[in-house]
Structure formats: structure tokens, C-alpha cells
Image 1: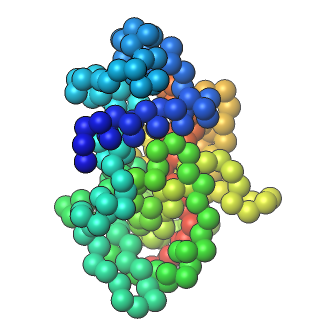
Image 2 (image 1 turned 60 degrees about the vertical axis):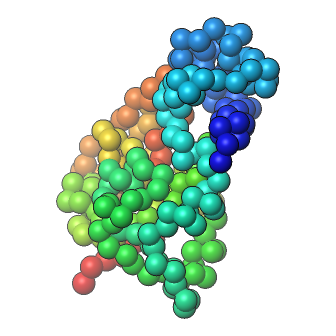
Length: 238
């Protein structure tokens, strides 16, 4: 893929965030240390960015080069999941840190592969916010003891949680029901119900005896940047 195409894709992502009210040209200029006119010229295709400039924009917007690539092409070239010829889809099991921070899962981070019916996965509705299309959509994590205690009795230790990482909005999946999310916290993910108060995410447990926690969002960040994905299936070990 040519460098110009990467720059065009970056512009598109930035314009999506601007139109969604998540970003402004002035804020991006302040984040990067560039003049506002420099950012405006880039957004309006009057000039390009140097490699160093692109790296700066990607860094402050928490993007990677993978976010600028066509996800279908990337998955075709880099997929490590064996193709499935039956009615089941193979889904990677990985650790919570990898699930929370890596758009694509490398072989070194694969702990296991589980099968889910293709018809089930296809019925699941996505609700992506920002540049999530390049993320590997479904991953599985295993619940640790701390999260199990906080979400007891709905979740138990060792439960396998299927995460839809293309569902990082706060829109209820079903009317009248509260979504359960994997949430980015301290470089990994924790499982909770989520609400927003001012610039904080309120993480609510299912177990009423467990404490409510809060995550302060960084300047320029939205809840979508912290929602790793919706928990769309729970499997219990027997």
C-alpha cells in the first residue's frame, strides 16, 4: 500500500472523529505541537505529513499503522486462525492485556482456539465507534478471580468470555438491559457494567458487596476508547 493511501486513510479516520465530536483541529494541533494551520492543511488535502508527523498523529490519537490498512487484506495476509470448513468459526483465546490493546492477535499471544457457530456470530450486531473496523472482531478471554468475585453470581471463576470488539458504544444491545463490557484499565481489561459521569467511567459490579470503581478518561478520549468490547457469550467450565 502506498504512503499516500495511508495518509488518505488517516485523514478519513480523523474526519470521522471530528464529525463525531470526538476531536477538533485545534485539539489535534495542541496534542501534536503542530500549528493549527499545518493540521488544517493536512485535513483539507493541501499538504501531506512527514513520516515523523504521521507517527506523532498516530501516537496522540492512539492509532497504529494497522488502523490505516484495509482490514480484509491484513486478515488475509496475517491470519493465524485456521479456516473452518464446517458450521463453526474458530475464535482465538488470549490474555486480557492482549485483548484490550492489540487490534490483531499475533501467534505468540494465542492460548487456545474455541469454536462458535457461524450462524450465532453472524446474528450479533456490531456497534463500532472510531477506527474499530481494523480490529479482529471476536476474541475470548478467561475470567480471573477478582473479576469473578465482582461479577458473582452472574460470572464464575474460569468462565470464558466471548468479546465483540466491534461493539464499543454504550448503546444497550437490548432495550431495558445493561451491557456487560470488558473495559481498558491499567493496561489490561476488567469486566463490569459501565456508566459515564463527567470525564469518568463508572465501573459497576454485579456483586453488591464489591466496590464501585472509576476510570478517569484522558483529555481528548471518549468512553469508546476504553470499551474493549461487549461480552456477548459466557461459557462455564465444567
